[in-house]
Image (cartoon, rainbow, N blue to C red):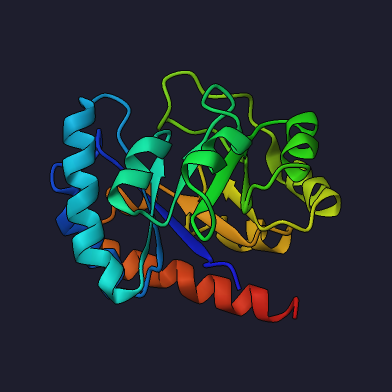
Length: 209
């Protein structure tokens, strides 16, 4: 089963991403994406290596945002690409299976196209308004997620403005996983907040089995 909590470490929000990631791993998070859109490639490469060395032995999948080259060089568990990044199949050439390739979608046309690719999962959103991107795509909402669920059998990762108060509704609408950035990075106790998400996922997803 696809991991229910997709934690995203946004370098612009975290001074110590490795320490933060270790807290999440200790709370039972098994899927973590490292996102750094501003640092030089050398720094992204070095910090990805650190994350891999610390988290992979414990079974945590580390996904690199945007950079299949760095993901491949570090032996990461996969790469996530957006609509302006390399196409899925080009990213797949750099990160062959068993590495995962995930792709972001923001409308039904993009979702249908993603479903025809070798993508291992499809991110959909933003579900709610979000402040973690400078130029966010239009909010798609819960109804979009419900429709997306009818169009693909690939795992769906919902992203964008999701909080612990809305996570249950997102899972009920068909998400396999929720991608969380700010609600983890700003929490007083990120590990406890992660466990709350995992508990919500277990409660809601168990009713869909």
